[in-house]
Image (cartoon, rainbow, N blue to C red):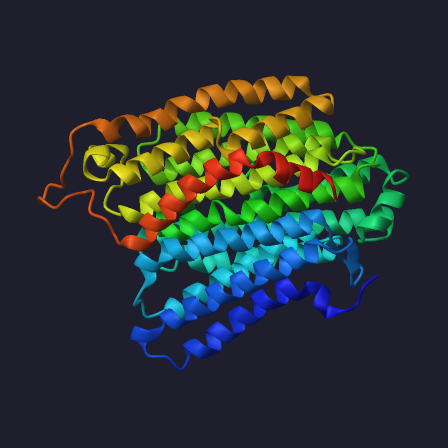
Length: 471
């Protein structure tokens, strides 16, 4: 065990950035609160550098509750890189806002909770990370104080609280059945624990994790938050928490509950099937691009869960495929939301009519990201999907791979519903103002960067996957 706080340097940098930003913002006039965003971006870059340095060292356990290994390293880097993109998306929205400091601070705290989710090796720390990743996100959802945002924040909070209580009950049952909360001790005792108690504990514990990841049946809040929150918050909530949440699910079964006399692989397979199918079918009928991306998120979580059914195997390919998939999904989904943030007046798919004629670069970026979410080569999501499909098949769930492949083909329909209007004639608002009026240069830059990033990440997938599996 390592009790040196330096082992948690990336997390401490994030925390320091949040505290320093909040204190600095207290003394800044409204027109200069952009300094807090600079502090946040600096902390994120420093955190990424610290995480890259830590990745060159051996695996270890910090304070008996926090694993520092390839899963944690990848979560740190992916989350903090995604947060840089979220900050970029948010600049045109929150610049000059009276509560810009609070907005940035809440983002950093939610990101810190997400990073912790990816490394937890104790059920009690899992609950603490769940709360830290969730509570700031509730406040961010209702940050605009408008009707839609307030309603979405209330739904988000109530479902998080309800399923969080179920999660706590699951922790209690598992502790009662095994006598421990640490993952290593759980693995030693789970096989001999009463199967009924273990089944109840696993299902209750998963209630909180399916909420955090947006998987069925804890998905109801996702489209409402995607529609009601501001575009930067919707981009964050539908992307970043999924990274830590899915790694937490994989780690839970890989390191703690794999020997339990519970058919947990079948449970995960059924959750994956329900998530990808419901997400795709519900997205068919969406005319709001934000709700469409919300349901798309649910389906993407379903695909990612394919890797979890391979948890506990001797090879590390399942984890490597999951980590790569999450990185690819993050950059691709944030790219699509960056285009949404660039055109805040376009609240329907028809609102993007003529985008290719008026803003050709952004139209191409949106097309790349939407086709990337389908899983079109050579984008990163394509490689990620091939990886998680292979992991599920190797674990004996060939039928799940077939279901996922069918869902992938089906999903092409609703993404193309968004692509087709881009090439039609431009539309205008009733008042005569153009719907496709850009919000600013920051979101545009993020959209271009993400479109390029998803292709580049797909092209360099081999070395990245090799690095993940070599650990």
